Length: 246
Image (tube, rainbow, N blue to C red; front, top):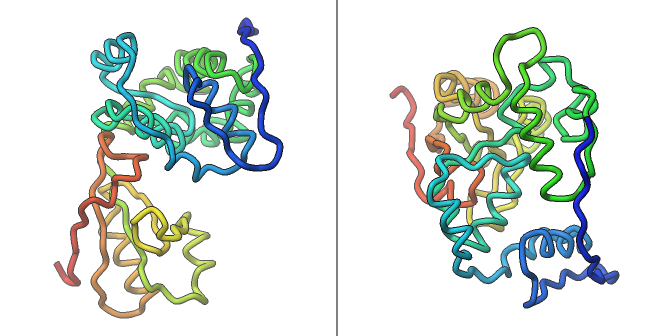
């Protein structure tokens, strides 16, 4: 299956590595091209929020959940441009389905499409949307369940974000092997390694940190996250302290 390409005039992009977000940019597609050309994703912080168009306000207003392939990027982009997206549930079709479990080579859209024998016009926003919809509408290999059902099941479950603050430097490889990611603190969140786990696995992960990383009883910060906050930079607005032995 091949998705029909879209047509649109080409803009002149900066070549000096500096991001230029023009005032006349009509939509996310224009801004995304500028952003991609710059390679500087911190330019997102300079986007000026603006009122949504009537169509966007109408569509977003009646939408129960926003699905994006790499929602960690798309949610921040959308929220900075249009704050209406701050109050929506979000799901990520790239990370909230264990695609490798079902035989796919990777989680990038092109890998998933190749594994499903699909082709599309890459790097065009509307074509990517059509491609993700087609993937989600299909049953996952070896199961009767559609990918969309699996995605929504995961999105509805709360997760716990755990920060391994002040963890020993020489044990960072242990954290990386356990899928912890590094946050440099520039976004207002703790400068530390962190991981998101299913809320049912929270206590086990905290115990792992105490036994294997800190090797003593410590206060470990964590926060319960739902689809309303997941993939947003606002996740750290409030933390719960879980004291040892509680």
